[in-house]
Image 1: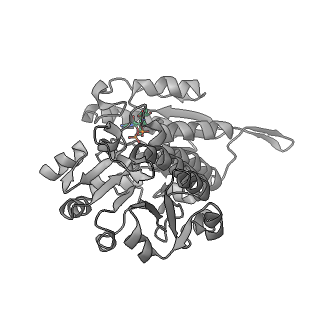
Image 2: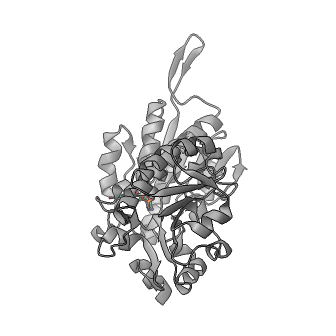
Image 3: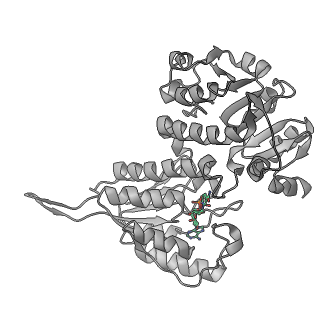
Length: 374
Ligand code: NAD
């Protein structure tokens, strides 16, 4: 079988598989066709792909000949139409939030897998692109904040006087938040973190940050380790506590998300206006509604000397390791669906079924089925 790897759009520097991952894939008795210049922005030249055993082709040839196409971002309906009728599409298609594309795939009887749908179970952890990319985002968000801040992160005792450490407040201590805490700690900041899940408290304390407690959060054991929506009363209590901490903070990094819903508003406009001039807010939830009232996706806004960075696609700012992690996640998933050099789709496997948007004209993932029925 032929596996095609696409070049991503201009604003996306990552590539689905780097040459090392391609080499592994080829050892499974498949051919890999890589679109010319696909890895250029991640510093992987066509030469390196050729050395790994891949063939370099034009985009049109990849669509015509591939049995399986791997990418990161979703492609257009016009391009999907150019694929072989039995060709399988894989990428981060954002299928739950893109009903138009999902409907098209179902109607055209395409088989598609969407990597953000990988179930968040222990067995699927090695295929979980959301976790890998959240790790990149958490790390990079801290570096971005440190770069913008007009102060040092660590404490310094110098002949020119002593400098107190910066105070960093992390809102949401999931995968991105924990990585942000660890990175800010390594840079020597005093770190405070907050989350609605009690399980996050132990993790925060174990990596050396202080936990900001707000009692009365709603938790649901059936939510698979995720947060659920909070009452209006709790959210107000939470905003008041954050307001108090924000006035002392130099940096706030927000990562709070609720799967399938708008991100909770945690930092109000009055809070931003009460912060010290020069402070920095990095909002990792900006593209899903924002944790800060003033953040704008992909923009930096300045209010009273406080800069609020609405972050879009941070993993694309670190394309080499982000692509390496993405490729490893892909290989772990592909192991489930490639056997003896051919596609072998076993929908009895909860990871295969859970990640599949549609097959043979039918939606497969249960949330996709529900979305198309409502
Ligand atoms: P996420 O990106 O959906 O959310 C980020 C964080 O925001 C979460 O910790 C959440 O509790 C928090 N949050 C939501 N509402 C909030 C509010 N009002 N105030 C403060 N914080 C709020 O989640 P994620 O980081 O992808 O994952 C969360 C947890 O899920 C992880 O810590 C882990 O326990 C679990 N998980 C398991 C797997 C797996 O087993 N494969 C994979 C990924 C995550």
